[in-house]
Image (cartoon, rainbow, N blue to C red; front, side, top):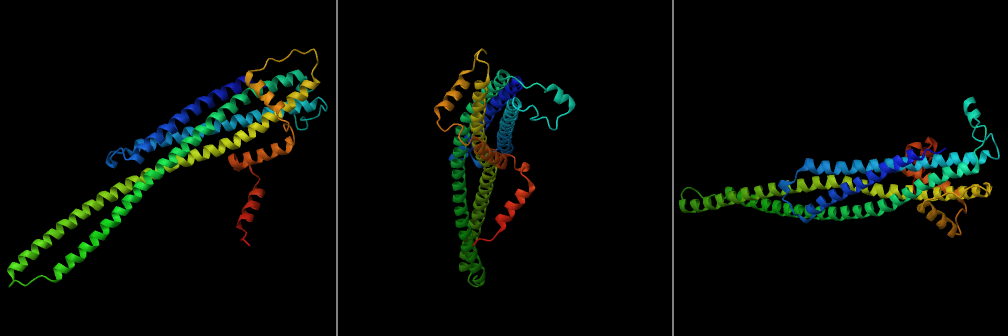
Length: 340
């Protein structure tokens, strides 16, 4: 039997973590927006706080993804068990090939259709809630990612402006250096005291201007370093948000096909159940999934092939370490082939 309470606990943790992750990401992006507008002086930026803010957001994003991933996989495993129990009604040896003696003894009698259907109802109930979480998470993270990218472009543009100002300052410094060298080479002799005094005054003025240019360039270089550091910090957040959107898309695609598989199995069990069995009370979310399935004329068509496809995409994007080594080597060899 499905332990629905364990799924409930996982779902509650995923829901709470998703809320925290959205809030943390939005807070970090709001701080970045201030930097893009130039609301703060670069000298006042507290980088340990900025880094902690982004680190917390990325850790929460990873935690949410891990919880959602685990829930999708656990629901899939529970569905496999329900499908195996259904197939055992027609072949009692299904799934027992490698089972222990105790396992074979316990599983000797196949489950009744009503019991398997009850498990599927519990799985579908959690699936419906998880589907709602994905529908909440994907637009939230997508919007947050686009805002982050927009504000990053603002900070990058401000850094480019500083780059241009630094180049201008360096050109001024080069021109001033040439003037100073010319002054040194063409100093009047001591016999022309009046000219020497005038040139010395000009020379001191050029030296003062050179010191001023150096101070300005140092200030600009400091500002550029600060902006580049901000860019490096928040690019990590943008990458994490973009990865979240891709991960949710893969998980939601798999969940959609998995839900279709569960409903198809549920309908097969309903046809085998005793007519006298009591009607199962289902949640509104599950009833909605079933109505959508029934209204879709293509529901159930090519289900095995579509599930194999989404499972492959799911593994490739979210669990690449589970891919067979030979397939990884073959793909690497294909990518290494020269074009043409």
